[in-house]
Image 1: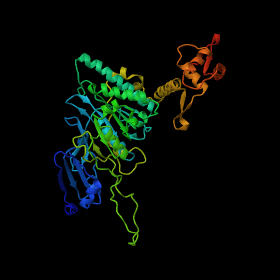
Image 2: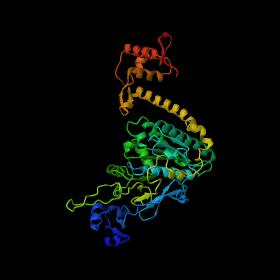
Image 3: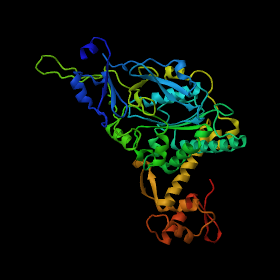
Image 4: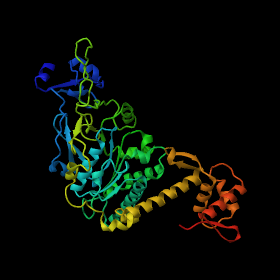
Length: 486
């Protein structure tokens, strides 16, 4: 069999274990038994039960991938696009919309650094534009993950504050559509009649949802709301992250359960991520996936006595970016690879090949009937100054709430770690949340409830005096204090 494979022939084995047993395999032992030093030449698929299909190739069949065609990018009658090829040449498809149920999709894309997640996201965004889907995209790497998306999506966010504003707007749009569809007597979404499909995507989602993130609680709630209410009204949600651990994604079993029922793509992973996939039910127990190496270069042994210098330079070995498993597809254990997206070599600016994928023209916009629900944030999404003001106001409110709730503040200079809030910060937080002017005694009583260190009335009076002198607090008659305007 190995002789056949080395002469350019493909060898396929169908294996089966006795009834009552479940087939398993050890990749290293399988390669050893077949005399194959390059594990990327072998593809193993199981049916999760008794049978396995082992295919041996002369060389890695996924080493070279072409760019996508326009036909690949367009939805078929089942709401699917072609995202790449399986090892045996079959088209690998991902569902953008389910016309049989009228459901928007929930999705997750996982992958370690350098696995090709950003290019995968770019391709999905380009396909959405081509199919007239409204794309709301939060790039929480400061816009660096997919800079070409700017101008080709309806809303492009780059901060956690703007991502929260986007999620709030999406939930409000979903609820507004629910009310309109109820009047219409409609219980499902019809593509483009009267509204376009809306896709909300959070890239680097772990930054928004991980333990200690400033907006974690609200973000988790909003994503769950979209998962519950958005499907039947044409509002989808996707999370793209470097890890799959529950604590990295809001710590919410409900959120994970909803998303894993959607489209799940697994790019190159770590061993810890694989264990978590099985533990969280994203991969059925007993199923195994062939590891995706970082580079397509078999390991060789070179004796120091043979007179030759070993070549340990891996720079010329082709990478495996974009290689993945579509866990929610019909072949979850079949390795596939996404189309080549963008230029092979880094470009000094925006990648012209990626820009070409998006195509000409403006992106699809949210329907006018939902603009009031989307609110001020949607209205100023293309006005950097106005959006920055909204985000600053939101960050300030969040900081004040954190001080009142815990008596601590996050220190940006120390990596976001919390420190005890200063007395002046605690006083400002109390006054910001007060409904009326307060006396020094009132401020003391409120400060003593914020969870911070106990203080005396004299300390509060000194803090109020310093804040008033600085213009942060206004002194009123009868010993009353309020937060200064502006």
